Length: 187
Image 1 (cartoon, rainbow, N blue to C red):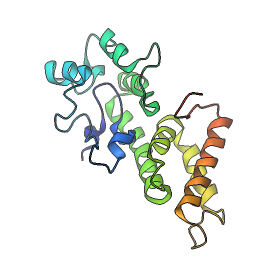
Image 2: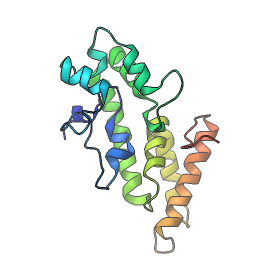
Image 3: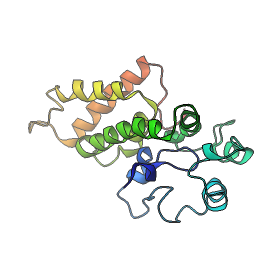
Image 4: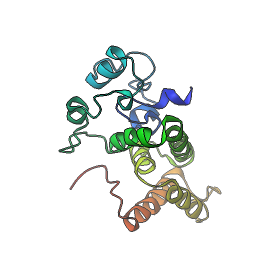
């Protein structure tokens, strides 16, 4: 895939979305490939109707539709890893699409590393949220620190469930220390 294929019209970076990273039959291919997302009014407006790659290319940005669909004002969007969509569009306007894509590529590679070596089959949404919302250096720190722990080192003494539990605990600790909310469900 070309790196531009990972950017959604709304600013979502598809490479950090659990629906994109999923291995299920219902996996989303991303906002730029195919038309499986034609139900999305933001995509229809920005890409299909106006021919833009993202809403940042539109002279009406930020429009009422985008704000309503993302639930920015009231937090309606159900996927916590979608929280950076508007900030991503702002980053495109500020630094350019290539800069944003380079920054997000680093995050995507981290989530792919987490999914390949630390996912017990139930951590995709958590890893996507953590890499979307936390600075990459904190994710790298969690990986480095947890890799050296005997319970998670993967030296035959730990199963994947133990590895997943260990990395999630460390990611949560680092998120709490940085005051970053990566909880998937509000209590």
